Image 1: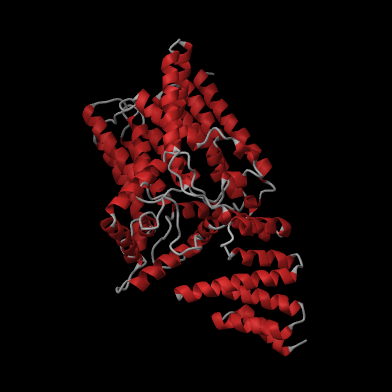
Image 2 (image 1 turned 45 degrees about the horizontal axis):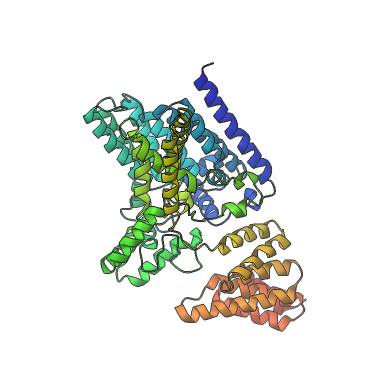
Length: 570
């Protein structure tokens, strides 16, 4: 067996063993069997696909490719956590693809280092066990890159790669920019006759046609269903606004404070746009509205907009990790493999930049460079989430591995001053890249974990998560609703009622200030208060709470039933 095959098998085996370790640890993790927030939204979207239901507003708000993937798995009988096992298997393939690409652009040793780095990267592992898009995106994109990153890649290779890149774009919209950039790069490479050029200019054009053909599928569906001319999905406008307005800081800030749940973000985007626009807006109009809002801010405050854009550009290379559904420290309480402090953005991205500067792979590795830079540029207009830059991290890992191997060789050859200078320069770059950051607020992450624990009837553990939010973020009064639920289940009814009173006071104050009462939350508070009062034998107070709930949601069948039963008596 050749050394290259032995190396490939070693990388694959390491990736498998790490993921087995993750699965063994994940058994008690609340997020292994219970989806939360965006995960629920993707699963609900896949259910609509299975049932053949149109999107609520005539067009896809979230890119549909991942929902199609989930729907296919469900059709084959896969449920949680089997879906996550499939993603872990894709994670092994991704490690192999990182190895193969690093070997193609550099050599086998770089391939081994790159593959092992990817196999153990905590950010990668975390997203493989969440119902989120990065793992599938990376697989499709890297497989396409592997097909075209060889000397004389022909029409067939580019056609298949185009289909894969188009599919990746239906999973994450910015991959459309990456696909188009690879086509342009290939055309330039063919014209100049540099290494890894395609077999003639027609091959990349076949890839372009394939990309556009796949992207045309959701675009045509959006138009046919009455959403207007929406390319893939219409969340681009809201996402652009989230990253470009007077309060934007480079991270995700929901359109309405406290409503970061993906399941409500679409409704908020549509409702707010239609409230503020004199025109009747379809989904395409909603997206255009938010694009205009962001661009208007650029016109009003060009200096602030420019500074923020530079900040986002640096954040994407830096040590700051934009927390999403979970964070590594919180998830690491259950999964030991996530504790690895080394294979993280603070190390990988500065090493990748060092690779761009010192190794200068512009000619021999132009597909990798195009992939990396196009991934970066495509994200800058929006905002920074850790999962958004995982495809970018895949390319960065290859360059980082090359730098490590070349530095090792230089050290052994006695060029130690060169290595030390390179280390110092990379360290300085890492320090500068670490300067831009956004204040972290992990309260939402504790709420996510607590909510999953509630669903598993782990009341004491859930209450500890909610109490952590109460301690660290005293202004987050909505957490009192979650606390009340846990306290009620623990039989601490008086404390539950006090928590509900605190929550309702804050919610009604918000309603007076905004003119938009949070109906769902207030209805739930009154219903739960009514349930507790009924169990305590205070029937008049229970009836008053149920009536208050019906005043907010007159057609609520469960509350109407409870009130009717209360009035009929035993």
